[in-house]
Length: 132
Length: 132
DNA sequence: ATAATTGCAAACACTTTGCACCTGT
DNA sequence: ACAGGTGCAAAGTGTTTGCAATTAT
Image 1 (cartoon, helix red, strand yellow):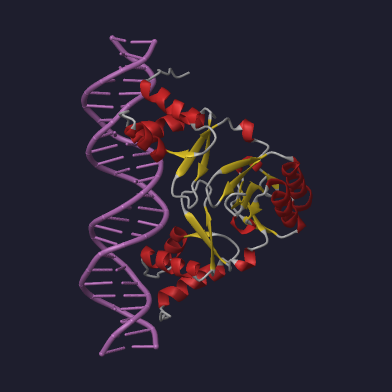
Image 2 (tube, helix red, strand yellow):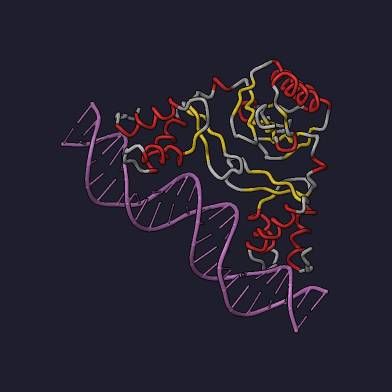
């Protein structure tokens, strides 16, 4: 197995993800934020570390509203196996829908439409309470 | 209102969409196909005509598996108001789910989660019968 | 005639890669 | 020492824009 060194950059990036573990953030956001708070870092490093975290399954990937950029959030893939993501078209917040409705629709699609749904890959779009 | 001229390029693009109205296609696919069959056309023209069709609501926009590129399909927005799209992660085909399940989940989200779902903007990912 | 359309080249935004230098172990 | 990490600049994508030439009416 490949060795891995701990570096300042990695821990700073990881810390930023931890501090914002409730929402999806972009490479640009991380870059700007770190740069503005005095950390000298290259975007490439962020891209590369994110790739590593993704391949280790420690990060979730999503996309911004018009698919302009990729968004990421801490969290293992397995932890998202059985719930949908609701994304608000207004404020762009992501909500986690973890109720029986997920199983119901999954079973319905399987039984009546021969379609094996992958809830973890599915994002439902709409408007949240605050943005209606 | 803005005038509009009929051109060879437009009708050729439109014809390609009509011939492939059952699936989502990319600008690149249109470009390659037309070029290979002897039509001289610029990608820009395709992009621009697609923008026009989109703004007129005659085209649906979607995204390819890894969000690398945009995909389009003929169809008015209103015609897709009340159904979900199922996209197969295997063959990339799009299926139209137009059954009571749509209303059920929409109502459930509204009632129990205060979330106003927009089925037309939502794509459910999974595997179709043939690709499981 | 004249307004819309086309298409090249250049610009853009996000992401990846090549490579020389730096850092952690 | 040396494998792994960093970051600049350059290359790669998909998409958009400026503009002069072309085409539809």
